[in-house]
Length: 272
Image (cartoon, rainbow, N blue to C red; front, top):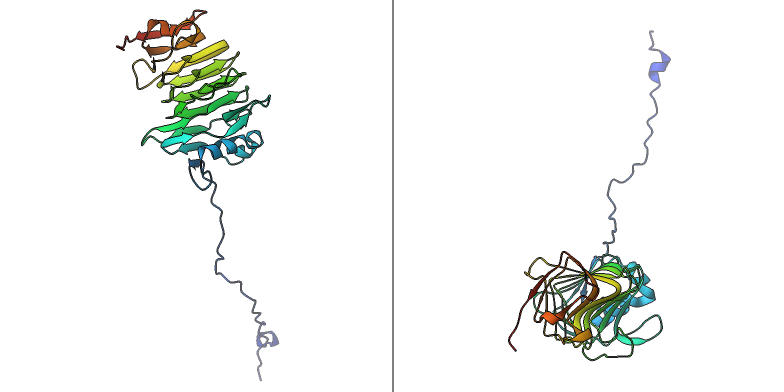
């Protein structure tokens, strides 16, 4: 008999391996935090709560939230938040000092006026810079005090710089609408209005600087109806840059050191 080779009679063993399931498992992802904070909202029920959040641990807690824009709802927001400066002097408003507010925009809704009433915005120190306020109405008419910065709308000093106000109105403040003090302190006012402030519209002294710019108004900044005369002129600055203004009295414009650059003044004589 002719038999086939033995090797051909041996079939290779078939090994069945366990197979892995091809069903995809659902993955859980966490949405990144929104860079916009609305006030009021469950996360921030009021402007007082906003000021408290901005100041917690000197701003360190705020910086970890990665919020780039705060939008405050239209309407009148009464400021009752009590803050302390470095010397523990108390006032109502917010005290911003430190590097945690760079490129933050605090904006009012434009459906109607967004009014912050009865509080001071105090920005101090060279670490505070590139902070922006937009479309806000700021009044601080009932907070006179022994500190020089009390009773103002916005007070920027000790080297805080590139603080920008765009389309903001400072009115009926007990002292000045805007004050900028000390060397290297710097504020940019763009299309702002200052009226009815008891000691003047804006002042920069002791080396502080104000740039007044604009895109929407001919004079770029309107300063009318402020108490004028002597040190209470509507605009008193050591130095002004790119300056243009609409004011209601020639005496409203005062630059004691006469350091001007690219300046233009439009004077409107308004009837009483």
